[in-house]
Length: 431
Ligand SMILES: Nc1nc2c(c(=O)[nH]1)N[C@H]1C(S)=C(S)[C@@H](COP(=O)(O)O)O[C@H]1N2
Ligand SMILES: [Mo]
Image (tube, rainbow, N blue to C red; front, side, top):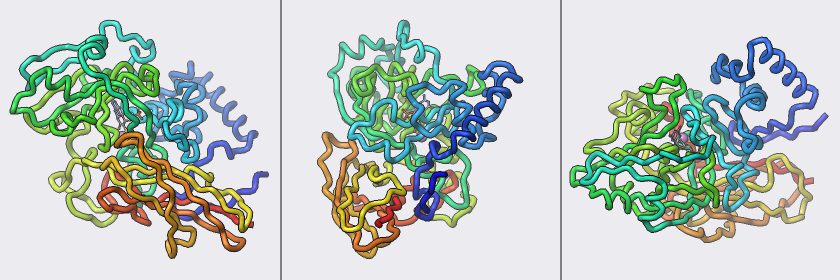
């Protein structure tokens, strides 16, 4: 028997630990899925027939082992396998640069065949719409004709923390780990757009990816979002072909993706095939209705909000994670314990991070490292000494360069459960 310590209250207090199940139960489940898979035919067929929404997370994890989850992503918590959605436990986000195998994955459709084959023969990026010189670009042309850029960029899904909202909202129940910070190499979207001659009528861009819709209906897009032309022309906005020195992995958008730093992860189109420069706000799949929209004014939990009272999310809020210690550890009283983590903001810069172990009565300032470049998350450390034995909660609060700090509790409820930047909390027992 493993003794389990109480974790802080609130649904976001700890990270789920899929490894805490007893071996016996795991084996039982595996046998169960094997026989079920055998009864239905191939494991692939099996996965296709059970809607992911009917899948408890633990079972999804098990099923994922039998079907298409890439080996590289097995340390992540699988929320669904088709489409693949997986988040990273907080203690595995301790690296300054998130390695590819630890970066969360958020897919709306299927991963395109080409990405698995890692073959960009015949692939081209089409740029059209409100531009003077519509043209298709091969990967070689992009690499050859434009100045190359490299930067560490934090990408966070706007739905990260959704599991914390009450009443519950539908969608992937992300807890803490739909965020990562990798090093990307590519070229400025602005350079490519300027080479295409952007017209005065251009107000927005919309991206299209090669990822087939879940229904496999070629007429439907999995997702097609975008950003205002000003953000597209911002020098930090990239077309990236490399992630941590490797060609983009299959799950992360091979051969080319958009990176719109500080904006919802959903603006960072993967498996790009087209960028459409528009004379109006882009109206592709998941651009309209309540998708990636929040109410224009604060609403009561559970409220119904008419679409005309919703607005598109722009900048992501300030946020932080405690990556050491893992929640639930025991430490010696009077021995300084090293606490560390990461902090980031949609503004691209964090000013300070403070921690408390007495529910916010007193705060201690942490050592916050400079970012290697704007929009990279920042590492912070602090040593805490717990004055007497007992149960503590360590909370971390980041403040960005505009003076905005993280709320202590889950912020304004919204119908789709976006932008939860409540402080992360871990439990520590001092004995
Ligand atoms: N073509 C395409 N681009 C996409 C998506 C997708 O499903 N298809 N998901 C978006 C969402 S919602 C997020 S949060 C990020 C996730 O990027 P990652 O999987 O590399 O972490 O990709 C975005 N780009
Ligand atoms: Mo997302």
